[in-house]
Each structure stands twice: as C-alpha cells, then as structure tokens.
Image (tube, rainbow, N blue to C red; front, side, top):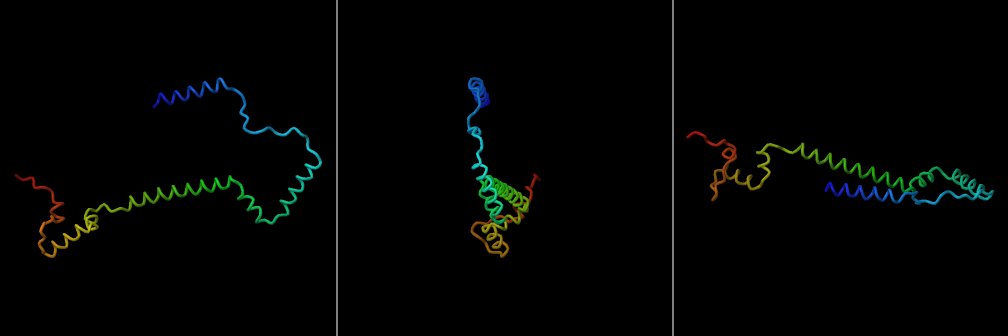
Length: 139
C-alpha cells in the first residue's frame, strides 16, 4: 500500500516535469476596448440594481450556488454534530445496573415473578441472587 502511494507521487512528478505550462481553464480577459455603449449598459444595470426593492437583494443573494454550498455544509455539519451528540448521550445515559437490564427482558421478568409467587415451573430458572452469588471456593 505504501509502495503504491509513492508510485502515484512518482508518476505525478514525471507528468509535472514533462508537461509544464499554464492550464487554460478560463479564457483571458477581452482585449477589446470599451465603447460608450458598453459603459451605458453597465450604468443601466447598476441603476436597475439600485432601484430594486430590498427583498430582491436577498433573492439575488440566494441565487448564488456558493450560498447553497455553504448552507449545505452547515446543515451537514449540524447533522453530524447532532448524530455524534445523540450517540454520546445514549452511551452515557444507558444503565449499567445488571438487575435493571435483566428486568427489561420479558422472559426473565416472567420467571422471576413465577419464582416469587411460589409457582413451580417445569424448568426452574435460577434466581438473580443465585446468578450473582460468587462461586463457593470452600473444599
């Protein structure tokens, strides 16, 4: 596994050495000088933005994909924190008392109630005291 990682680093290094040059991901800025029509159009767009009601600025704000990405990351973060917090709360609030855990089992509850009532069952289940008593070490 470690050798494969170094192999990938080596291949990447070789590619970077043999393929230098700028990456052409976006076209460069236009070299055409601005005309009066371009300046007038930009001025009209700015005036239209200023004349819009304030709630439209909020609409334009939420049209951006960046906002959706940030909101998604916040929601994912909150979900992860709540999941981890809930898991921690369940683990710390769980009972460690064996008698209480045993009382949650319907089979044990049924047999303990029969034993306390004095009814003999065909298969005698040991009582809780018998189960928790340390073994007799006397010879």
